[in-house]
Length: 183
Image (cartoon, rainbow, N blue to C red; front, side):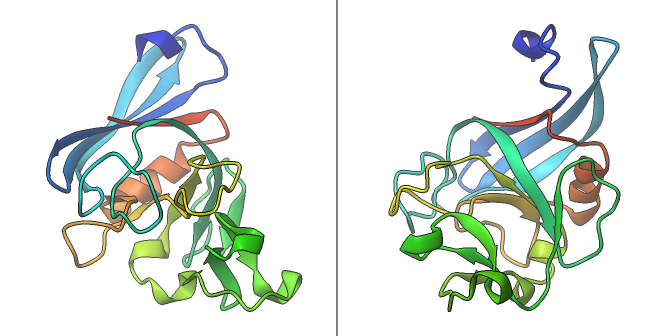
């Protein structure tokens, strides 16, 4: 956190600290007048196989510092400062090579996507954020890594899952100056 104290390009910080297995603790901070204020904290879930993502399907969550590309949700925008995609039946998290690691609207790009039909993931995608893991879209490295709401399982395929109210609070307090730190 200290390394971002003087950095005006970072105003929100979501820290995800791995504890064991698919369990982690998250703390969400907002910078006010140069000082970090804890907004919320709590237990979260990560990949079924823990940390250290290396490839698509390894069920691991990536380690590192990530920016957020966009927010999305099946529920309406809660008032985030991030670009927000309202999930409709034609929205997919694509893992096909032509749109690898992108959220696409198949009605716009006219692509028969085989990836995640976001509308099918209730309550997971009530709210979510796409982090900047694999920004160049290198096929096979892993795609569609999100911070999103918890579902019924105590793990994810590689994302970070928060309680829904926690996720909503992160979105409400965030803009393009958010960093997600996963360690």
